[in-house]
Length: 60
Image (cartoon, rainbow, N blue to C red; front, side, top):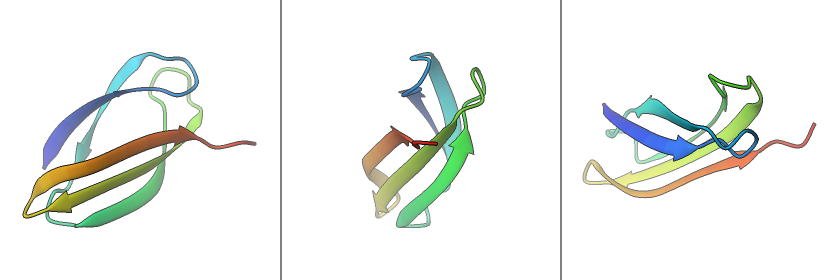
């Protein structure tokens, strides 16, 4: 597991999450721990090193 910090696309607060680095491509929805809005998370790893991360708002 790796802890990754990023900015919420809604409230702009810095938040963190734990990511499993043995899974090469991950896409899921996680609620912001500050404003509770849903964020689509996409993370990609190669040889357990993060090579991409994106956190985008989900239009409701």
